[in-house]
Length: 265
Image (cartoon, rainbow, N blue to C red; front, side, top):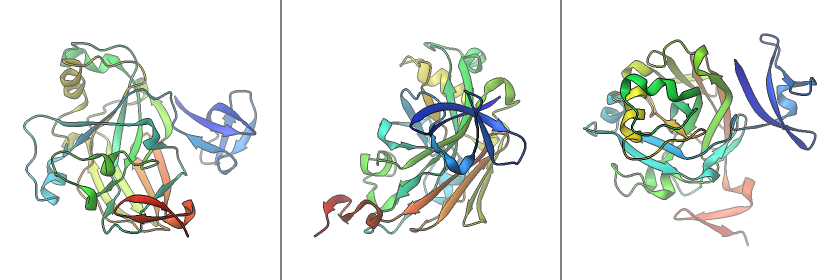
């Protein structure tokens, strides 16, 4: 089952697709609305956001880096998240802002000291993430810093939460990214260095995972620069299409200098 969370007519609603390919949603109260009539939110109550870097060997190679002996993990703040059809800001002083299409794994029940063989039983479901990175701001390729990965609105999540029972094999899902309708990235989750079950075992060995925590599992080869006005669409097999738009500083009424926001004169 697919479900979403949206804002409509001043309230927050759970929603499901209505019809196939009709662009309609059915709200929990029974109303039917067009997808473009609502504000899309992250599709579940998000807890801790745990993100992976360099989890696809081909992506590490494209960045001229060696893959890791153990997962490269960092945390993200709640302000980073936006929903489907949201806008992500591109500061005017940057040269390289890259999309990153990723499988997002949603924890469904407490996991502490979980074995790999039992790990997937702790997964509630999956969705798509697009976790933008501004390469200009990296202090160290192996430790993404706050300005790279904790920017407000820099991680789109959604559009659907898809229950784990409806995903036959999270280790064999095709991923694709399109920029302004042109395909720019392709991969498959079987190319992960550390798969979903391993990541849950690894993380739960030293931190308790709770319902609503989400693991962003990294991106494959094919990242590229985006500019203000670009529409970026990430697809993952069986999970839908997550779209968002890149906007400039002017949308926020601010200037930018070395990544710091400044009031306009």
